[in-house]
Every structure is written in C-alpha cells, then in structure tokens.
Length: 241
Length: 211
Ligand SMILES: Nc1ncnc2c1ncn2[C@@H]1O[C@H](COP(=O)(O)OP(=O)(O)OP(=O)(O)O)[C@@H](O)[C@H]1O
Ligand SMILES: [Mg+2]
Image 1 (cartoon, rainbow over the protein chains, first blue to last red):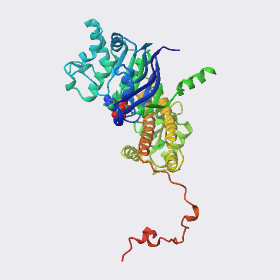
Image 2 (cartoon, rainbow over the protein chains, first blue to last red; image 1 turned 60 degrees about the vertical axis):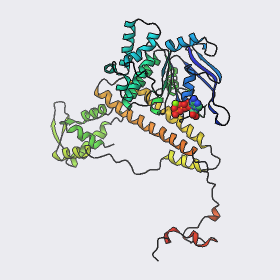
Image 3 (cartoon, rainbow over the protein chains, first blue to last red; image 1 turned 180 degrees about the vertical axis):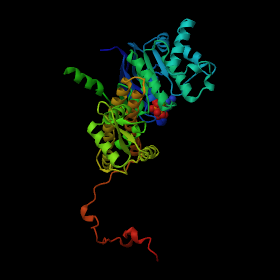
Image 4 (cartoon, each protein chain N blue to C red; image 1 turned 45 degrees about the horizontal axis):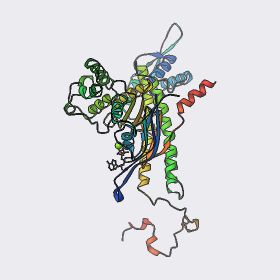
C-alpha cells in the first residue's frame, strides 16, 4: 500500500448563521495516496473549492479533520502548517492568485524562496516548472502582460515547482484551449506517476478522465465515488492468466 | 467510412498495388479499422469498373499496380471538399431511455443519470489512458492514431456533458412526472373524439381554416 498523503475525515463547512447560513460541505471523507490523482466533479456551488481550501489548510473546517502527511491540521502549530504549505502542498487557485508586481518566474520562485532555497537552485527549479507548462518564453513577463491562459499556467508552475508531493488544483484548465489543457494534464499525470498525489477539481470530463478516481459532489456531499479502477482491473485480469 | 475514396486518395499520390494500399490505409488511420486484403481488391475492382482507376504495370514479383484516372482525381478532390454527412436524426438509445425515465413517476432519474455518467467516464478514462500510454506523438503514424483516439475522446466527453446538462435541466423542472394515461380515455384512431368539453378539444387542423 502506498503512503497516504491526505485524508479528510467527516469534513463539514458551514458559512453564516440563521436564515442565510450555507452548508458548503457536509461530512466529506476523502483519501489521496501517493501516486494517485483524484478528480472532483460537481455542479457550480456543490462545494469543490471549499473542499480544496480545507484540504490545503487555507481554511479551517467547521468540523471534521484534515490530515496531511500524517499531520492533523487542527492540532498542528501554525509554523508546521506554514511549512506544509511551503514544501508539501502546491495549490492552484481557481482565480490564479498571482502577485502582480512579480514576474512569472518570480511568482513561481516564491514558495522556494520562502523555504530558504539558494538563488541558483530556485532559478533552475522555476525554469523547469515554467518549461513544464510551455511558458519558458514568458518567464520575465508580469501577470498583467500575460493572457488568461498564460497566467493560469504560471499558477500551475508555482504549484508544482520543486519537490511538491501534494498538488491541489482548482479548475487548472479553465482558461486553456484543449491542446494546452492536455499539456498541463499530461504534466500533472507525470508528477503523480512519479510519486506525488493530487486533487483535480474540474467541470471537464475530458480532464477528469486523467484521474485514477473521480469523486462527485452534490450539495456538499460525496454522492458517488468510483472504487474500482477499470484499467487496473483489466490489467490484473491479464496478469492472472 | 468510405474505403473507396480513401484508397482513391492514396492512389492519387501515385500507382500502388493492393496490399500496399491496405498497408497505407492502416498506417494513416492508426490501424483503428484495419482493412482486409479481400476488401481492398474488391474495392479496386469496383473503382476500375467505374473508370476511376485503370490497371497499370505488373512488377517482377507479380504485383498488379493500379493508376488513378482523371475522373478518379476529380472524385478525390470532390470527396475532400465535401463534408461528411452524418446520418439523419436516429433514435439514440440513451436519449430515449432518459426521456422515458424522466417522465415516468417514481423513477429516480438522478440515479439513472449517475449510473450512465459513471460508465461514460470509465470509457473516457480508458481512452485517455490509451492515449497517454502512447506518449507524445513522435511521428505522423502515431499522430494519425492519436487523432482517431481523440475523436473517440471528444465523443465520450460530449456524452458526459450532455448528461450534466440533463441533470441540471431536471433539477430546475420539478413537475416532470407524467402518469400513464387511462387507455379508455385516449382518442380512437380515425374517429372524432366525443368530448363533453365541446369545441375546445377540436383538432388543431381546423383552427387555421379560412372563415
Ligand atoms: N465565504 C463564503 N461565505 C458564504 N458562502 C460561501 C463562501 N464560500 C463559498 N460559499 C458557498 O458555499 C457553496 C460552495 O461553494 P464552492 O466555492 O465550494 O463551490 P464550487 O463547487 O467550487 O463551485 P464552482 O464550480 O462555481 O467553482 C456555495 O453555495 C457558495 O455560495
Ligand atoms: Mg470553485
């Protein structure tokens, strides 16, 4: 059995009180292992971004536990959570969240710099990450001077830069054409195949199909989760013969 | 798929013999629909009969070469310049099944949609794995194969998108169940309905009549 990178245990998220209260997540259980890409699908407002924010320690759920690499976020010291976010977690925000005063390369370098990497190593890693999303020629541009799809790819490069083991991506292909989307998915798939774990939130079935498992959310609940990998079971069947 | 036009388009590049044509067809379509040699020869015979190709030389190994005619060349140009006509509206089993299920009282249509979505996505996953396993296309033959797989991927995606659409439409349409009507109350064919409601139930056809 491969290492468990992430576990959500009965995670609920309520917003507001009284008549205007919203239940964004209602008791979600979810596990991601190393070498596993899990897609999360569901209608707009079903709780996908809320789930991802909780998984990445960006928000604290109303109830339930989030466990990243064995660390219970609810009990962890802020410094430990901060270190997880710098080293372990790569987060692709639905709205990119780039820093406008930094170039593409500087945006991508940020997590490594915060983690105290040497400048030369940072540059190499940032260049690798930018190359993996085919953006080498835009490294010195500022976000405002990039197209929407290019900005999105900078956000993806920032999430995968360095040795990130858990990649949480919220609609990472929303602004991309189908061919560029495939490049990104192929890259994510490659990272996962070489040992990372990931959650991919997407509306696009063609992109969800890159995942090992697809989880459906409806009104904050997991309504269906594939447990059997169709390919895996085919291959196992072949091995038995 | 037009085997006839495909072979003719290859012959437009220069004379070729039967097995060679089969091999060219296969490698240009990712071997997704491999032709059998017999089919290739019978197609060539028909092309010859219709004046689109003529028999050419026979080489030392006894291969009978075929050459395209001017008419054949025009047919290739015409084929490439004409859209492929999809069949007219056919009864799609899935569309009919979901339409029925949506209007039958007591059927959990959301569950029906989800079962189908799961199956369609599994199909999509299989296709995606197949493509990913092939890696980046490093030659035109690989590219040809990937284009065919992509076609299947986009078709499968369309099905899932349609299912998403069905689900969100149904969510907004609460009162969709139609009880099965009492057969005795249905109008009999060929006879006007004797109805207590009188003129309001007149067949629509009379409405547009000139006064
Ligand atoms: N800060 C907040 N305050 C109040 N309600 C919120 C807040 N954030 C999210 N919600 C509500 O929680 C629900 C889930 O939101 P979420 O952003 O997780 O949806 P989503 O599945 O990511 O949708 P989309 O596909 O549109 O991105 C929604 O009904 C949303 O209005
Ligand atoms: Mg969202």
